[in-house]
Length: 196
Image (cartoon, rainbow, N blue to C red; front, side, top):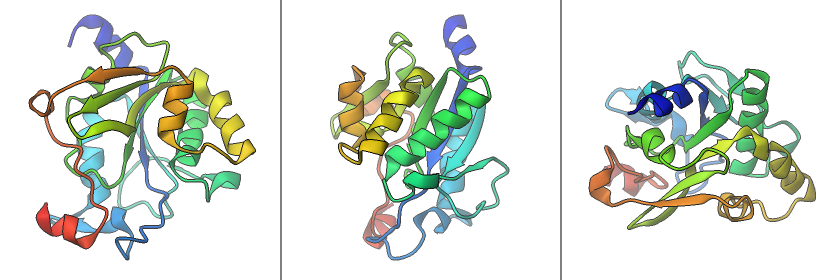
């Protein structure tokens, strides 16, 4: 990591998105134990060293993690975009310039995610495209997109992360599986956990 990227990391907050209902999984995915620890703790272990600070958006419990819990507030039923809004609001109040989002169900989150995302400029969002497709939930967002996110949430339409990335002119960075120090495999159902 060069000096510019190191300097950028000190201004980036990590936001773990944990507000989903876990309908397909059947229980709270974030609390599901993998190797003796909640799944969300594995995500925090991998994201934490890449950013200056971490917060959890949408969670209703701490999962034994010592970090701020951000409520989705009036947008609680509006999916990951609500968590992004909460994270951006918190980041603005704590003088961060960017947030990197990651869902709570990606326990093998790449340890080089932020380095790869920050390889573009920093004025627009950035997202990786792997052979699996675009990893929209694992993106870097400048805090300047906060008003755009709020507008979408208040309008109640176009609530997808992918739609926001497109609207905000995101940089799409193409990477191969071998470029990743980890994986974007997510755990949506008990069978996924068994395969992991």
